[in-house]
Length: 137
Image 1 (cartoon, rainbow, N blue to C red):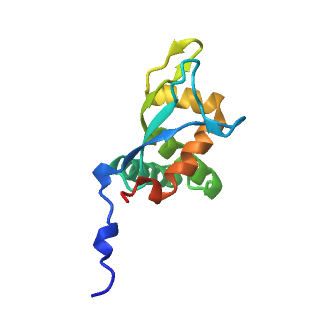
Image 2 (cartoon, rainbow, N blue to C red):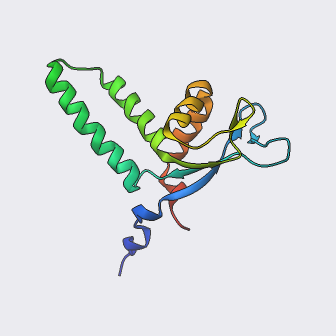
């Protein structure tokens, strides 16, 4: 028998992992004054959450293209989809504050963080794009 590919199959419900935010100044995990690491719990690229975002996006993009009857830039579509997937991927966080207060993990607050600290959004996009980060060893 050859290599059993089933051993590499991905469980969409188990596609969640914790990511330590990296401080771009030090390239070390971001920690608060008490030594707590800032972490994000992220859904993986094959999770039902991300697949649903892709499905909804395709549907709305098709409807928009039909309604406008003109071609939108493929780059704009790709960037918009990447952004939506990055926001949806963040399902929990720990040790994240904003303006001196603890910040609840909601899509609106994820967007707030991404809008003001685009390097965090970039880290999320890079991390979730690599399936190996979500595969059990």
